[in-house]
Length: 191
Image (tube, rainbow, N blue to C red):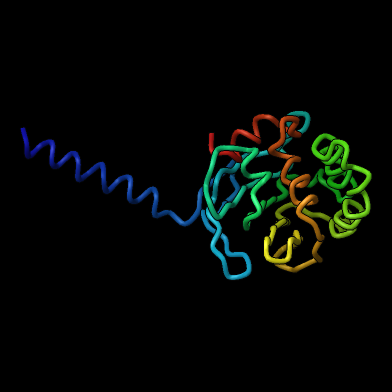
């Protein structure tokens, strides 16, 4: 009996170590890396999920943190490295639709700070204004050392936007009490 239990324990351990050793996961047909590097710092996948609009999946988003957590307010308030990775999954997504959705998200997230953030929101929209095609990947990464959000498209830096207040509102789009998508929020939190 002890040998059977030992064998089962070993087999289960091997199975779990294989799963945790995977370098990527599949989310709705999109390959999502478990780790990304931002300015020399490794960030771990906290959670990932798809965003749908009218029964059509428009993108898959992943949240990367230096310290994994399921506490959305902790993430919003944290002055540590973090990033979101957004991969476009529909040809229906245009830069106009994406920036319009960002506007709506900021309106929900920023609250009374919206007007103060408006120039920086416009700056972000300008970085997203190029034509968008299916499989484009955007990374919005926050660096606490200079308190800038770095915006990249397909591994090309488009620019950076200053301010911890901007970072809080940006991540609040998906993680605040009024997220753009409650199901996506749960997935980003690994729930």
